[in-house]
Amino acid sequence: DVCVFKSDNLDCGYNVAKLLHKEGCYNLLTITSNNENLTDYKDRTTGFYNYLEENNLLRYEVHVHKCGMTFEDGRDLLLNNLDFLKIYDGIYCQQDKVALGILSLIEKYNVKVPQDLKIVGHDNLELIDYFYPKLTTVKENFEVITLEALKYLIDIIEEKEEEKVQSVFESIIIKRETT
Image (cartoon, rainbow, N blue to C red):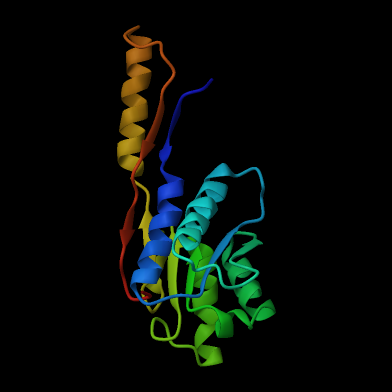
């Protein structure tokens, strides 16, 4: 019974899987948070998995991998799971920092992005501009979300609104050089 203003994370996960598939990927993996309390990551994972299921792309035992969501976690993930480079041709990292950690090491293993492996991140961090290739990512519309929440708060203060709302907003995929 609370007000919610957030991105449509189910749609985010679904649309990233759809983009990777459209770009020629058939062996897809999503990397999500190992923190079970973060529902945004759960929803992205569900959306991603739903697309795989609907399009008969469930080919392996693992299509979801959980880890921390830092740059170092991305590097460690790659170093400890080099077989991912042989199995998957499309990876959705649900945090840009993880994707950038992977990208920082990938050339060492003779994997070309996006020719051999396509990668999509999430959050559109400014840091992306300092890495090559430039990361395709999901950008949440925080400006619109914040304005809507602020309008709602003003309405409550001015006693124009009492009802609890659950507003979900569309995100966009910014296509760059990794897809």
